[in-house]
Image (cartoon, rainbow, N blue to C red; front, side):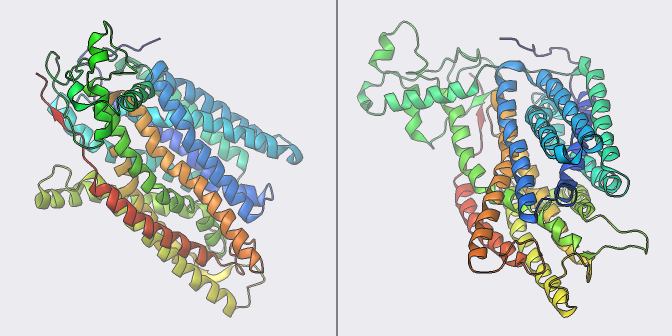
Amino acid sequence: MAANPPSTKPSRGGWKSAIFIIFVEVAERFAYYGVAGNLFMYLTKVLGQPTATAAKSVNTWQGVAAIFPVVGGFLADSYVGRFKTILISSIIYLIGLILLTVAVSTVPLEARHTVFFIALYILTVGEGGHKPCVQTFAADQFDESIPEEKAAKSSFFNWWYVGIVSGATAAVLVVIYVEDHVGWSLGFGMLAAAVAAALVVFLAGSGSYSREAPVGSPFTRVAQVVVAAVRKRRMPEGEARGVCVEDDDYGGVSMEGGGSGAGTLAPTSHFRFVDKAAVIDARDASSEKRDPWRLSSVKQVEEAKLIFQLIPIWLSCLMFGVVIAQLGTYFTKQTSTLNRSITRTFTIPPASFQVITGLTILLSVLLYERALVPISRAITGRPSGITILQRIGTGLLLSILTMVVAALVESRRLRVAAQHGLLDNPRAAVPLSAWWVVPQYVMCGLADVFAVVGLQELFYDQMPVGMRSVGAAAYITVTGVGSFLSTGVIAAVQRVSAAAGGEGWLGDNINRAKLQNFYWVLGCVSALNFCVYICVANRFVYKRSQPAA
């Protein structure tokens, strides 16, 4: 197994190395949103897909793009290493963008659909290796054993998000305008050039990076705990001969004596059904060599518990992903029907309204860091002000309010369309200013600041060190699975509503559709989901360390 040896040079790592890596992520987000931000309009206007079909195509592509990071994170943590994974995935991403540019510029329209989607899904492969590793690799540049760098890492996630939102915002402002008013080939070509430049910058900083070695399959270690616990589920209490404390698989520190290091995971009382995996019975005591599928170390058991308790949090955040999926689909469709004219000759592209969400995130992160954290820190006494789970919960609550606002605005839009006799003329602009949709884009940005940044930090901080790329992939899959769920919800709502007569709630004629009802459904389901999240979060136990003996 090839390994990237960790650096021992004190000159490596820190902000000076993280900056190079952040640049790569900014370029990747610039490229991703340059494609995703206007994909819905390309599918409907150029490829001629119906509205519901285009929405499902976008959601499916975004879902796959967010699921692939699980594979990329696993390979990076287990075998390849994060640096090599980022390098390979960036090259694949660049190839996808080049093919996408070729598809929209030289491929005949009758064959373009196939080539276009092949290029799109090549991007998902690149996304799979890129997304789980870049943030984790950047965070690895800060040494938690040094107080100054540990404090820097605490703010890193906020400023990291500022960087990627800056890239996304630039794409929405510049690239989408170029795609709509100059040409799709030039727009996608700009994205390819940005990723190529980022790849050069990433390689330029390679000598300064601090690298973690891959540790082998982390899922095997978790599976060993489960199997060992099941095999000993009926073991009598009197048969216990002690607990296993060594951890040969990691070459790491033990939980109870004999180890070295600054600290280890403190034993916990939740998920007690797996504790027997570390208990030595008569058969273990008589064996010359430990069978890892019968006996796990205490450290290994506690690492498995960290993963087990993150699963309910992940599940209870999926509806947030469903809500966010509407940003690039039905929010854009809704905006496209409104008056977007600034002057007689300049009209804002409907997809460019997503920049409002990006600007909201940028301003909100600054406000969060400079005002909310100090105020809440003074009240709660916590360095971060509020807990990670409180931050995520706030984001979920704001996502519910986003759907409420969107539903109310859509009801207003339909009333104006009816008053002006436009119900059967969906291509005509409704005489209602597009600024009416600004609140729902702002609410979406606020929800992102709390929920997405919170999920990033939770799935980095609360994962075992050897599984942090997988942890990054796990938070990304919240939006991915949310996109898949959105596709399913769209199909179900359209089928049920169409069966009652007419085109259904999500028909091509948005003026005859009932999009506001769809938003209300998402809002109500999100509210029920929020109640589940509160119950799960109240049972969550944050990772604790204890000094090594």
